[in-house]
Image 1 (cartoon, rainbow, N blue to C red):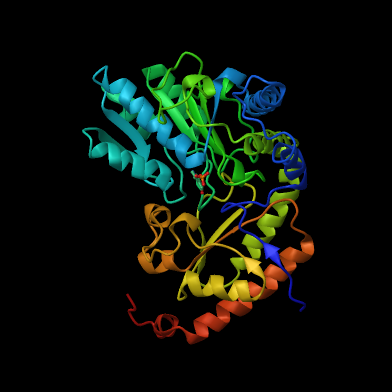
Image 2 (image 1 turned 90 degrees about the vertical axis):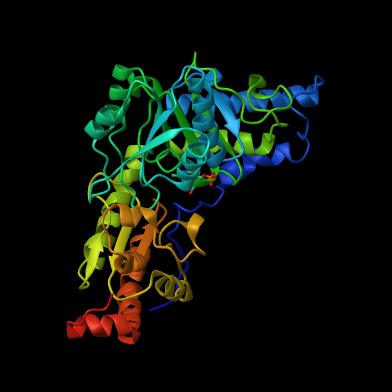
Amino acid sequence: MEKRFIYADNAATTAVSEEVLEAMLPYFREGYGNASSIYKLGRDAQRAVENAREKVAKALGAEPREIFFTSCGSEADNWAIKGTAELMAKKGKKHIITSVFEHHAVLHTTEYLEKHGFEVTYIPVSDKGLIDPEDIRKAIREDTALVTVMYANNEIGTIQPIDEIAAICSEKGVLFHTDAVQAVGHVDIDVHKQGIDMLSLSGHKIHGQKGIGALYIRKGLVLPNLIHGGGQERGKRAGTENVPAIVGLGVAIEAATRNIAEKNAVIIPRRNKLIDNILKLPYTRLNGDRDKRLPGNVNISFEGIEGESLLLMLDMNGICASSGSACTSGSLDPSHVLLSIGLKHEVAHGSLRLSIEDDITDEDIDYILEVIPKVVKHLRDMSPVWEKMMKGEKYE
Ligand code: PLP
């Protein structure tokens, strides 16, 4: 078996595409103007920013004036949640609803708000990693300011019933935000039709560069600023525009949302082949619903081994993957997402996330399927936990 290099960690980040890079380069070179300057160089930069805004809006079914560029997905989440909290607190509404398995950009923001007088309800998820919209309905109170629920989970890839949740929020007159960082480019989104009030996205998950994101804010909803300063982004988000990154985001989202169905028709059978074959190994389980999941997401737990050792051995074999969220790697705590769907700590520790795209070939899939059983066997052969499991002894 010849060693290959396979990048199967697209949920962590993606490579900047040629198309995006080509579009960005002129704005590092001759087009370096400040988009606020009135001479031609500045006006050209401004036009490029507005052109990108139109592309982002079109991809989401929004109007350009509803799109605000941010420095990343985390900033968009922070702005939506803290901004709504500040706005609604003035009306005496200090209750927020979210789910237990959001990204930390959301969870740490709601925890911050809890320390500042807000009350937060954390909706549980099912063992398949899905939220029941009726739980949201039951949690809504007179003083509920915001419901924020992620579109698709970053670890187990489950796609949430966003339309139903948005409909409940609209019926109850509560604002609804969704963190769609993992969903954009993989599922069809139309914020107006779906009744979404705010939506966060990030460039580096869709072949744009790192450090650029956007927040869609429905027309008529005026959030207080998160960043104060100059008059950029119609005075709502200060800071000289990162023109190359914004231009890149426009091209990236246009490409990502083009032919979603065709791309998924290629990815889903390959992902299913991975899942079906990996699950043939004993003591494995698929995390997250089998069907309501992102097309390229595979998340499997292997009992008796540590996810980190698995990742290192896959790396030695040229395969880049992830266990839990890359944002929390370095922490020894098991993933809050895997615990939320009922996994025991030791099982959550032995989990692997592969996130593939349509550039993965059949040969790549076969290679991964050759490497994983060997690596898992090797690690289990060395594992005292596995030995105890095999002898039927208690190992917790
Ligand atoms: N939300 C989700 C669901 C994510 O997966 C991520 C990144 O992994 C973020 C937010 C943060 O995005 P960014 O890295 O652009 O800050």
